[in-house]
Length: 225
Image (cartoon, rainbow, N blue to C red):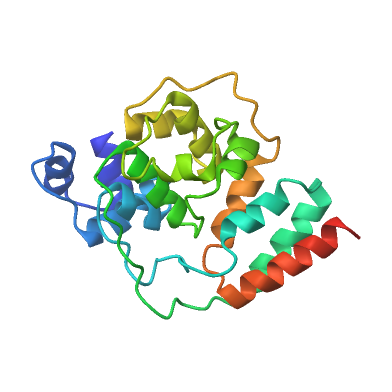
């Protein structure tokens, strides 16, 4: 594995070995090189590595009144053609860099905090229990219960981890490996378009509050046409 990463990421084997052996923390340059080789979004790898997400990779978090969870909720109720039209709209909108750095959270470094930070990396608020359940067969709980995963006041279970994996667009086995909480819930009743919905969420992560309002308005029109 080290040999493959060294070759594909173009980093010295000694530097990579030090990070893998936990004798050195990864630097931003290394994270940017490793992400494509690991098939992980670069912004996500910063989160996984416990590093601040650079401004040039940050999502539009926080936006108001809408967030990307609002887009996901509507996409989950659409048929394939409607979702394609919505995704095309999102891709057509110009990227507008956030006008400020993201506020930091005070979560401890726990598996639950990692999952909520990955949601934030898509500009999805923690209070989105419904989409976690609809897309990834997450537990039937309240928004506040999901939000409490961050400060560690709710016990994270394999069902949570599997559901987050589908919502985030990663193989559940990879998310189990990252969090150390498993096994994968193989019988999860996942949304048939979970991969497409996760990709849409990633595409929409940079949309401004004004752009999200436009997307929501169009999504509602598409659904009710």
